[in-house]
Length: 211
Image (cartoon, rainbow, N blue to C red; front, side, top):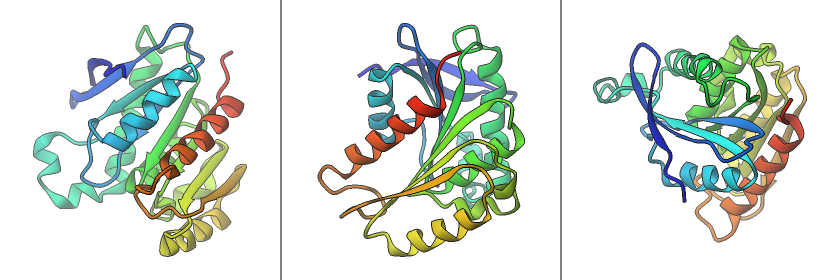
C-alpha cells in the first residue's frame, strides 16, 4: 500500500501523509479518533481502498506530540475541528490537491471534528463519512453542515447507534445512517471494516466527483 509522502500542515506544522493516485477524482481528508494518529491501522486500511477507487487521501495528526500528551486536548472538539479546517485550507492551496473536491472521513471523536470543520467550510466540503463516530459531540455545528453525510455504525455498538440517531435528528443536510451487522465499535470482526469501506467509497463516488 502507498504510505504517502510526508507533508506538514498549517502553522502548527502538523505531520501528515498525502497519497495522490494518477487522475485522482477527489481528496479525502481523515480525522482520527481520540488518541490516534496518521498511523492508525484502520484508517490507513480505509485510505488504501479509497486510493484504489481513485481518491487522493490525507491522513494527518490533529495534535502535535506535546498537545497530545494533554488528554484534555484529545477530547477538545472545537480545537480538533479547527485543525481539520487547517487541513482543508492547506489542501485548497497545495499544488497536488488544489483542484480536487474534498470529502471528510472521521472516526470516533474525529467524526465530530470533521462535522465541525464541514460546518465552517460549506463551500469546500462535498461529503462527510463517519465510521463508529460521535457526531453528537459536534453539538451546535450539526444543523449548519451542508455536505451530504453518511453515518456508519456497528450493529453491536448499541450506545453509539443511539447517539448517531440523536445527532441525525439535528442535521439539515442529506444524511443517511448505515448499520453494519455484527460489528462492534472498532469494526474488528471479520469483514465488517471492509463493509464500512464499501459504504464510504460508494458515498464519496456519488457525492465527491471530479469537476
